[in-house]
Length: 250
Image 1 (cartoon, one colour):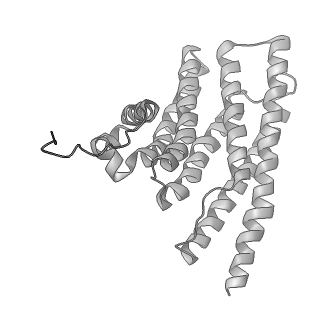
Image 2 (cartoon, rainbow, N blue to C red; image 1 turned 180 degrees about the vertical axis):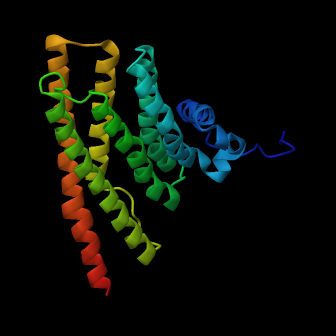
């Protein structure tokens, strides 16, 4: 006997992992980016989840800086700062990953993701130095310590500013061209975020003696690696490639 109606076509269903990832992203973003909470109901259609995760780092920055300052008085706030820092790092990890997986890649995300990284990391690195949390703080005098790290921070910050200026000029001249971060920039950010995690964890645990020295060496390697990637991407990619493309176009 023939069926009165043809069977409905079989549709591919998203895997349970994709469903869980999407649900976690919506909840996570709604919690740490409350001003964007009203958009979460239509997140899949409006492609707001990855962009919201990017913007969440801007919202987390003042909370992180306040927690670090209070952590110099009450140790419990160091753990709060560590949690906020990890949230910021996770938002950077998953905004790009989910935007590519769900087809939500946008010019907004390509441009603002590295900008949000700079806004999240640069003030935090300065506070690390001012609070004596950078590597080898206990082995050198306070004057040498501050001069050393403030000079490093100025160079690092100038690089970030200069790269942003070059990207802005390039995007203004070629609106349809991508200004997404290159791989060396991503490696730099990863080194900074791993190093920041160990710096805050070291302070939260209150390490001293040999344990602190070992962690300081690890932190110094991570910060040195980030600096090398920063200088390379600035001098050999942004300063050269972007200018060469401008000259070729003219």
